[in-house]
Image (cartoon, rainbow, N blue to C red; front, side):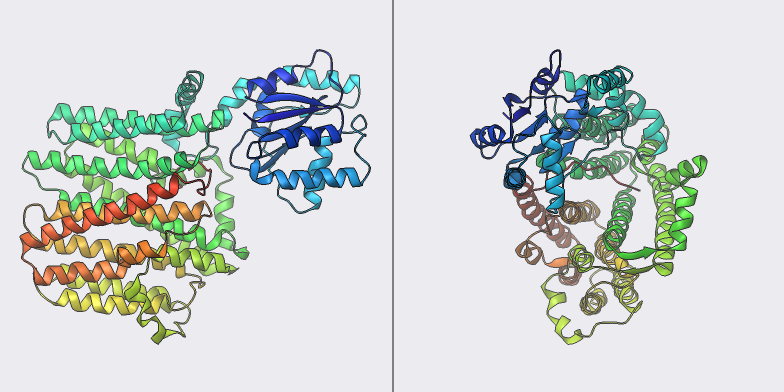
Length: 599
């Protein structure tokens, strides 16, 4: 149990100790910093401790935001400061600084927690300060100020603020106006009954899998049920994040579940639609795989661009300035958010089309919509990059290298290209190699060796593209070009095999590899680094897998190739899942909660 130490003389009629106990703290009192130090020393070494001024006046939710958020080692609001076990040493040093400055007995003069925060700031130690908005958190200096602070507390509906803050500040039109107005109350209902965000996330996944199973029946009632359940799954998907924000239940496991289950749900639903269409005699597996590839590449564009630019210096652009200006006008904000077809709009579209049309029409509309959205977002980001004056950091270059997922084959000839390529040649070469291998695979008959030649060229261009740090203005395009090349090659070869089961096997392989790539993204987002090098080597790297499938297509019959794709998919899935689960449930994983896709 975390420990809260109330410093100073108790204030008659104060609800502070009760508020702290309601937040799960073991409350103790200390008259001065020396006694506070002793109480801190007696608290569990790996537990959270908080120091709160006895004169604190404010909302309980302000204390919750400042003292219970697990994502931040040190956090504070006016009159209160908290430290997790990993930051206890910094808090002890701040207390030492107070003793050395003679502040040990001056609790009645000002706030000891606030002085400690000042000392932490002076030492350069980062302290999180949550946005309180209209919530009150203050340490009144006299009875009149205390009465005014109490009146300010009564003037604010704390529960209304808490509910509103549970909803993401930036979301899509459909989510904002069709889901969040009631899903926030569902989140509160779950919180009051002890449900956790992870349980709601799991319920969302199970609902989506049932929806996929309904779609797989291939009947009209099944398609209608699938559409309804898909929307229900999305409501739960919004609820889990709102529940996490409402009750500040962020966790390492929750980060992993929330980050990956959205993709698992959507792509499982694609498979369900393809199975349902097959029951009606229509083979749409190529469309399902194409939709998964397009959506994955869209996400990689988002991730790569953001990683390349979020910590860049001199990061200015007239295109970005225009975008910010458009975001200041109400109707353009919503139009721009809808154009990119975010998850809410996309799932609503899929659900409605499933219920009233056929899987083929659903995939056609989905592919066209996602292609237009991809063209819009990618064009805008290219323009920003070309007009931007920015110096990209080593961290950004490392992140792009990790997203590239280069294996030993690209690393071996890299020494031949140590000088690298100039300027825009890097993404151009990556694109050229990808187009070559996909074209050779798609435009020749199954069983030929031309795709192998294209893959060999692709290995060389991949090595050349990553020969130097990816700090160029358009180098963030390299990872999405690699994704499109690898996935597109698998799709083309499976389609050319033209045997039963080839495309479903290719779907499984791409899904397993895509999981690995999403896992890489979310590790980087959490500042936890990329997956271990041994895993990348074991699954061959993107260029190694591309070469392998082309060689297998040349050596094996179409039926044998289908079996080989299935075996590779199972092996890759087992390796990446075991390592991913090990990482995300370990103590070293970041305590975050994914905020969902941005586009």
